[in-house]
Image (tube, rainbow, N blue to C red; front, side, top):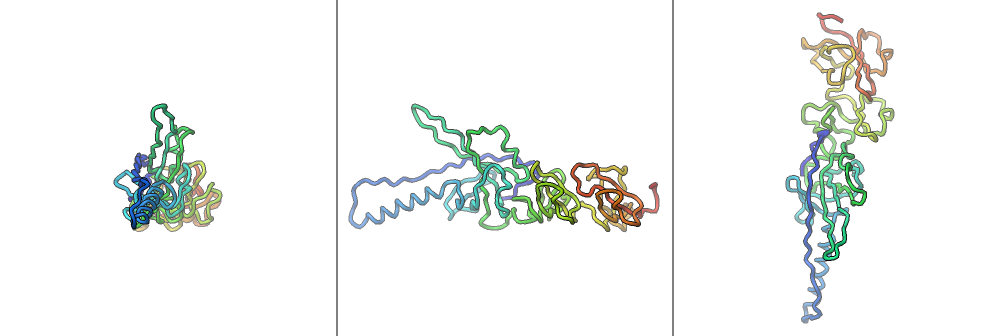
Length: 297
C-alpha cells in the first residue's frame, strides 16, 4: 500500500467496492458418528471468517492498485486500526492509509430486498472535507484507518502519507511530501487549531482547513537566521518569492538576521526587510542585512 500523494495534495478519491462472499454451513439434522464435532468446528470457522470480513477495527485488507478489499488476515497486507467518521485526521497518527466506506441507504423492494454496497476511497488527511460534498445524510459514511502490516509505512513522520503531524514535510500548494524528496516548503512542528497556538519556535504557519493549522520550523524553503536570499522584486512579497541562495554565491543578495512579527522586531545590524503578504504567516517580516556588493537597496 502506498502513500497518498498528499499532494494538497490534490489526491483524487479512489472508488472501490468491497464484495464479500461467505460460505454458510447449514445443519441437515443428520449426524454421522464421529463427525458432529468436526461439523461444529467448521461452522464456527465459517462464522469467524464471516465476522472478520466486515469493516471494523481489527479487520484485514489487501490493496491492489487503487482498490481495497477485505480479506482473511493470513492474506492481508494491512489492518484496520480504527474506524472514524468523515474526518480522516481523526485517525490515529500511525495510520498509513485512509479508506472511505460509503453505504448507500437501503430502499426496500416488494420483489427483492436491496442489499447495501460498501464503497471505499482514499481521502487525504489534509483535505478531509472534500469527500463530504454532495453526500446524502441518509448514507452511512465512515473512514477506515489502515496500518500496513509490513514496511514501508507512509504514515510515519516524514514519509509523505498518513495523518499530518510533527516531523512531516509540507509544500505550499500540494500538501504533504516525503522529506526525502525535493521541493517541500517547511517541516511541521505541530498541528494546532489556530496559528496563535503554534510553538514559540515556529517561523511560519499554513492553514490546512478551517480547523487545523500546520506550524512550521526551520528547514526546506522556510527562511531562518543565517540563511541568504536572492533578491526579490520588491519589499512586499509572497512566500514563493523568497528564494534561498548559497551565501558564497553571486545570487546571495542579503542574509537573514531574524524573522519577526513587525519591522520593529528586527535586531540591530539589519538594514532592510521583506514582508510576506500571504495571509496567516506567523512571522511575516524577514529582517535582512545586505551582502551583495552591487545593485540598488
